[in-house]
Structures are given as C-alpha cells and as structure tokens.
Length: 63
Image (cartoon, rainbow, N blue to C red; front, side, top):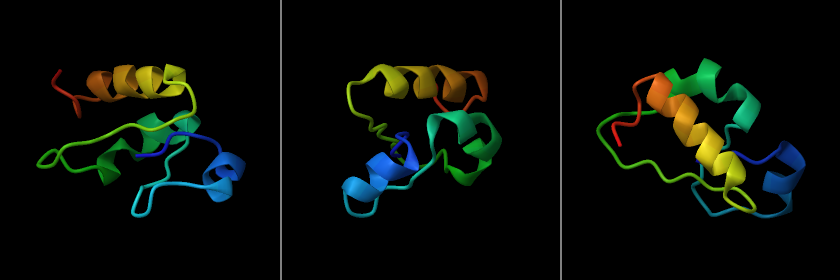
C-alpha cells in the first residue's frame, strides 16, 4: 500500500501497489484484506509509520 500523495505515486511506484494516501487511510481501511500481508510504502518511512498506527486503530494490523 503506497501512502504517498498522488503526484509522488504517479512519478513512480511498485507495480501492483494499491494507492491510498495517508489522509485517506482511516476511511478506506475496509478496502484492505486481513488475510494477506500489507506492506506500507512511502518516501522516508514516516508516513508508513503513521499509516500503520491508523491501521492498528482500525484493527487491520495486529502487530
């Protein structure tokens, strides 16, 4: 899951990555499946960390 902004995502992303910007994570968490691993992608790791915290609150991440 790529949590960068649209312009960053469009500039280049991992093929098959789902684009959900950090600001939309809580509202779109239901799009994610709990049966598979979720990898968070951003530029430096900070937004990925914040997205992980939001997903934990939504009970998408267990650890």
